[in-house]
Image 1 (cartoon, helix red, strand yellow):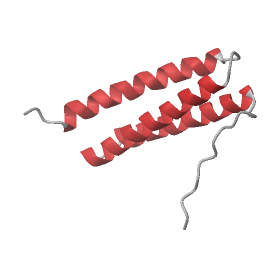
Image 2 (tube, one colour):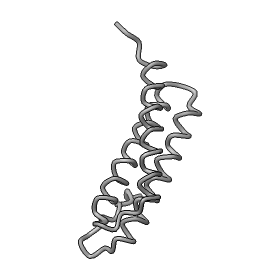
Image 3 (tube, helix red, strand yellow):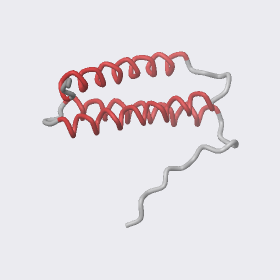
Length: 100
């Protein structure tokens, strides 16, 4: 089965579509964070944190591509999810990475 290709957002996309894609990526980031929090081992936790960081980066790219019509509510959600990702990264590092 071929890997599903993610549709790239071209120049013809409207700001509303960019906002919609950003919102979807933020939902993916929150889902990945939930996976990381429920992880039973460090490998799963790292996978969830990494997926959340990737989805957050994609959401940020969509928001920047949207132009001047940035939605303040979407920006607040982005900031909240970003804080959660940073906190999850710190929790992962303190729990799973041992100092030398």
